[in-house]
Length: 304
Image (cartoon, rainbow, N blue to C red; front, side, top):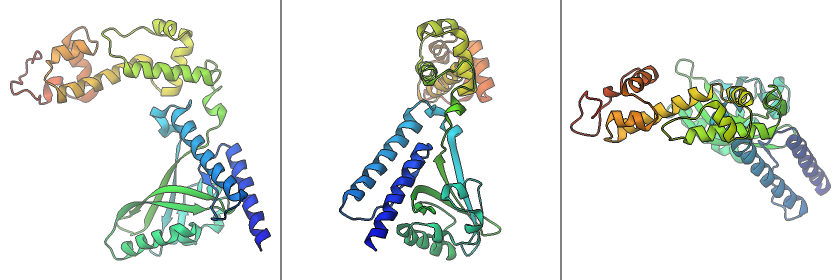
């Protein structure tokens, strides 16, 4: 019996390593509580996966400001008895099983034992009618006995009373899906360089924004690579992004300071107040004078 348990633990470790090699960092190996070398190895691998996950999906070459491009929503649809009636396409591969083995099961049948009591507390509240929406951590169990830590939202539909259970996870990203699809983006260093340009624009607070040609010189790259790469990664041009950010900054200054509007226009890089007012209205739908200022002497005069 002990030998069979250890064989399963070794199998779990092997499955976890294969998932890591495939770029899947949202699985975990279940703990047994044993005081042995396999348990030490389990702890270390789980820790390593968490570190890689945080590094790759938040600090790496995938743009952290547009992370929604690399996020997948996993969803279950449950009936009034909390039986799974439908689910999103990624669920079978996530749990490592056939769709037919998921449909018709109660959700607690695919949860790890430690999550079952938590889920049943929620279902009791839902049945009593005192709960329509909540969030909670749930741990799912795969067919290979790996665990998946999730943070789920549970929503009750208004007319049918059915439940939607959803969680979000960072999707495994193929290397070529980010790098190499554009001829101008050759490797991770190119992506990191463009990310550095993004951060530079985000923090830029000067009066005159540099041209793309000057930016290319600053960052030691060519103009075409910079333009094509920036648009490919961030779905906008460098100048459009800069203009959008400075207008957002101007709105903050208008709402939270007493700085005269004309001064704000100059501070964020506009040469004239009319140009600023026109761009502001296009962006927000109202002129800068529409917003109430903190100063009690506010008027329609852009100098105030």
